Every structure is written in C-alpha cells, then in structure tokens.
Image (cartoon, rainbow, N blue to C red):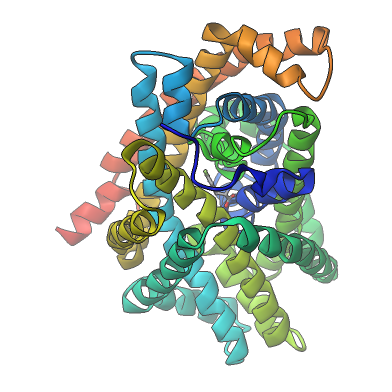
Length: 460
Ligand code: PFF
C-alpha cells in the first residue's frame, strides 16, 4: 500500500498546496449553493450561523484533515486504516461514497454553468426575471442538462487521468483572481440597484428571533454548507495534505484558504440579493436556480451583459472544475493505492459511473435536491464528526505533534484546538447530524412542493 500516485513534489511549494486547496474549496458551493441556502434559510440569520460555523467548526476541522493527511501521506481510506483500527476502515469507505454522490450532481450543476457561458456568447440572457426563470427550468433538466453534464464529466476525467498538477495550479491562478474581480465589479453594479437597501438589510442584519425560531433547520443547513464549501468531511483535504512535506505552517495555510473561500461566498451574496430584490423575486423561491435566474436577468439588462455573463459563467465553470477534480481524485487515489488500478482506467471507469448516477439529477431538480441534501446535511457532517472523534480522542497526541511541525511549540493554542474538537465541535456536529436526519426524513415524506414526497405523489 503506497501513497498516492502523484509525485509528492506536486505541492512541495507552499503556493502550490494553497492554490490547490483553494481550488478545491472555491466552487459551486460558494457561488451556486451559498446564495440559495441563505435564501431558503431566512437571510442574515443563516449568514450569522454560517460564519460562526466556519470559524468555530470549519477551521478546526480543516486542521484535523490536514494533520491526518500530512502525517499518514495516504489516501483517506489508507490514512484512517493507519491511524485507527477496526471500525475506522469503514469510515474511509463512507468518504469514497460521499465523493461519488456529490460529484454526480455537482457535475450537473457545473454543466448548467457551461450552458450559461454559451448562452452569453449567443447573447440570449433574458432581462425579465420571470422569462429568465422559465429559461432556467427549460435548460436545467432534460436532455440539454444531460448533455452538458456529460461534457463536464468528460473534462474532469481527462484532467484527472492526465495527472492533476499543472491543470489545477494553472486553473486556480487564473480563476481565483478572476472570480474576485468579476464578483466585486458586480457587487458594485448591484449596489446601484433600487432593491439594494432592502437586500442588504435582509442579508446583513440578522434577526436573532429568526434563529431562535428556526434553529432546527438553520443549524444543519449551516453545518452542511460549511463542510461543503470548505471541502471537508469526505477526505479531499486529507488527500491534498498527503502531498505535503513537513514544514508548512498548516494553521496559517488553513486560515488563508478559509479566508478566500468565505470572502468569495460573502461577495456573491452582495451580488445576488440586490438583483433578486430589485426584480421582486422572493429570495427563498428560486432554490437551486437562484443565481442562474437572477444573474442571467441582470446580464440581460446591462450593457455588454452578454460578455460579462459569459466571462462570469465561464469562470464559475473553471471554479467548479478545480473542485470536481479534488472530488474525483479522492475516489481515484483510493482505487490506485488500495486496489492497484491504473490511474487512467480508474478515472474513466469512475467517470462513467458518475455520469450514470448524475442522470436522475439532470432529469429532475427534485432528485438533485434529494442527493444534495443527503450529501451535505448527513454524509459530510457524519464524516467530519468521525474525524473529530478520531483526532480529538484517539490520536490527539500524534495530531498535536504533527500540527506543531512548521509552527513550533503550540502551547495553549494546541490545547484550545484539541479541546475545541473534543467537546464543542463534536457536540455541535452530533446535534446538526440528528437535525439533518430529521429534516431529510421530512423531505422524503413531505408533501410540500419542492419535497420528494410531493414529487412521488405527482409522478407515480
Ligand atoms: N468545496 C467545493 C465547493 O464549494 O464547490 C465542493 C467540494 C469539493 C466538496 C470537494 C467536497 C469536496 F471534497
């Protein structure tokens, strides 16, 4: 059982590792998922809880994955086998399954971004939000969606099969600055819209009464979103940190990665909500279509909107690619290490399977929701919880020693980190997981529009 089939020098430079990790973190989670989660969970109340989660749970949990990866130099399954015996071996399997499920629908959404890139080039964004909504529904499911899902998957497979080093570094170097420049520019445009004031108070001034009233749904949603956006809970950061040599300051790197990721999500909110409010669309309504409907309508409205839109959706597609690569890499690195399968064969085989598994999501939005909720609110949170238990309680000495490499004596910071993981992080994740399961059961059995039970009633 060796380490992953990529020369470890890949991330031997500090910038290489940070760029790759930022590439994994920054993706559809920030630009597509974040705004519609805010919309569905009540605006600023969700934002407040989400930010709290990022700092108090996400950041310590990222360090957990980093130390596990760098210490073991293994893929996630191998890493857990090395650190814990018995039941821990199966946890690695859950990571693999989670990666598989997420990538199946992630690729469908990424396919939409390619479609919307082309829509820009065709100058076909519709300024009227209602018409733009209709256009989204038409493009988001059915044969069109399946085709672009296949195209995106094929690109991901090609990059991973070829080895990921240059692809990711290049993509990230172009992509992160591009996303920041474009979204900041759009946030300035959004600031000038008549709905901006109302949108800011919706997005930025939390009503703690809303949190108190809806915490059972906000908490699991914020936990799921924090793990999703930081690429935690399924071993992606273990895999990337396994390519590191010893002397990086992981806390500093982690802070940079978390900082970039959170800033991008936050700015996207400053773009999307003013547009939705100006158009008179309730931010909770458009669900998975939020950015496609609102942004496309804005692009349809402004001068050279087709070009800005094409650049925007093109950049998002690249951001999705660098995240999807890390998702596929987790599964492929497992097959290479533990099963001795050739990289190309593994990438093509898994890619084919992912294409098939994504077809239901490309066929109907409710099925995409079904996969997405399950992966975020249950699987990722469960994965994060298991790692917290392992590192906090089983191998904490090793973890502290590993974290101190490149930093020096941790002193009380180390104690704070370990105790944060041992009790508050674990308790919060247990609660979030329990609530997430309840929500999911509701979703499966519920008969409100947008829920799976409703879908079954309508379709069967
Ligand atoms: N962090 C990615 C995003 O925000 O789009 C999604 C993701 C990538 C989740 C890798 C999990 C993962 F392992």
